[in-house]
Amino acid sequence: MTQSLPVHYSLLPVSPEAHVFEVSLTVTHPAKNGQVFFLPTWIPGSYMIREFSKHIINLSASSAGKPVEVRQLAKNRWQAAPVKGDLTLSYQVYAYDLSVRGAYLDGERGFFNGTSVFLAAEGYENDVCSVDIHAPEGKSYADWKVATSLPAADVKKKSGFGRYQASCYDELIDHPVELGDFQKVSFKACGVPHDFVVSGRFQGDLKRLAEDTRKICEYQIEMFGKPAPFDHYVFMLFVGKDVYGGLEHRASTALVANRDDLPAAGVAEISDGYLKLLGLISHEYFHSWNVKRMKPAAFAPYDLNQEGHTRLLWAFEGITSYYDDLALVRSGLIDEKRYLGLLAETITGVQRGAGRLKQTLEQSSFEAWTKYYRQDENSPNSIVSYYTKGSLAALALDLLIRRDSEGKQSLDDVMRALWAKWLADGKGLEEDEWEKIAIETTGLKLKPFFDLALRSTQELPLAELLQSQGVELKFEAGQGASDRGGVVDAFAGKPAPLSLGAKTVADASGVKLTQVFDGGAAQKAGLSGGDVVVALDRLRAHDLDKQLARYAAGDKVKLHAFRRDELLTLELTLQAADADTCRLKLQPQGGKWIAGR
Image 1 (cartoon, rainbow, N blue to C red):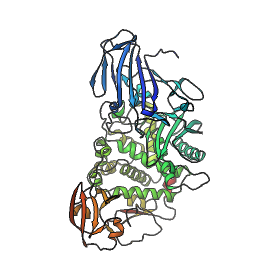
Image 2 (cartoon, rainbow, N blue to C red):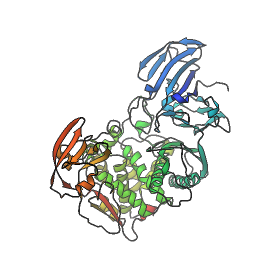
Image 3 (tube, rainbow, N blue to C red):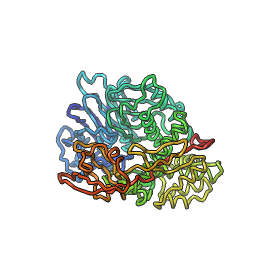
Image 4 (cartoon, one colour):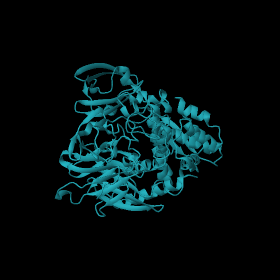
């Protein structure tokens, strides 16, 4: 292979057992005053400063075979001394982050995002660059392959190892790479080739996974209008235990999920775990339009050295969260009733957090960097999610448009108008532009709704709007911690059980409170998140729901708990559970909007 581009990278999984990638970066015409290099501090789609540079090891530079001095300028910036001729920067990256946001390497697989492994050469961010991806050495890696949507320049047909090319640094870091002896299934959606790569240890029906995913992809492509905004797409899924998440990219997505969520061979129905996986797939794929291309002006271009604040994350994450489950219905994978069950759970989740009464959706979007992505035990009391409440705002907006236009328009029309605008100018949306386009597209007076939904903490008019579509909503007291709401044939009106007003997990010493909710019995008694309840009325605490069932609202019980290593003795006045659990009842001929009618 010959090197002719101004910037060229080489990446080798040099030590899988030590989780180390070796990277080199050659600049053919370095800056005369000394070339500066930097590594991003965050990755697009995950709005938190993550300090990827902390994993850089043994950074050095050379030119014409001789060492070159390198000086660190900041936590993620370095400058090499001036040289004549090519300059090569060499370094290692410690890669042991199993999430979709970083880099990972062991003896079974490798994965990386460019933001974790590729330093940028300052001044060359807009230049074409290339990267050689090498296979690790040794017989145990003979079956390893490469999966990526990064454009290939000169690669081995069977394994995919070799040279790849990107039009600029932004493109280079927007194509994650999977390495290993993974399994792959392929399909076409609206004529576009798609690969689904699965790594990890599992048993599952990948043909079923591919077919169901194809239906989702075709619905979304057709919703926005052919052609798709890419000519090849790659799903990269790692399956393990107790993992979940996804991150969107321009022509691929990285996913992690529980191995048991994969569809089992010969099982026709969709399990709850598989449904969750399909929803994740749908969510990340929808981002191909809504945030990877259509995006806030604050992200055009991304400044990867510092936070990029916007009040529009509700539109890009919340609306995507609305459509991810809708796509499962409209592509024929689930029916309206099961969709309503998912919707009821989302409504319940938002209703149970007092943060919805303290933080607006615009504030939630703007403060994502410091609040949503840095949650603690008090977060349910202080913040609201722009994902979940954002999805409910999208639902309310969709139903409002359908009602006030007498069924002639919907949120779909707004999304297509936004897409047409992006196709025409390729520009990001200014902070007030999303609302303006929605009003212009529909011709409706939507400003009062936006003021209420986005800039106030008032409750969304969901009951009224759902009723207009033949769905009745009521809030009842939940019947235990596992009751997250759902679809009913009739509202039961069961008596409210007792509630501690806290989220709990089992602990070796008793029951640990992970979150304590505003106004609940636990908070009023003086308990806090992190406390471990060890006894109720001098009996060991083990199953609080079962133990509390023997009391009545207003009863006082003596409670013992540990806060760190200190024993607390408190008196708890029991309370009835709040009516915060959503029940939805589908009326005859109701819910037609769910299927897009």
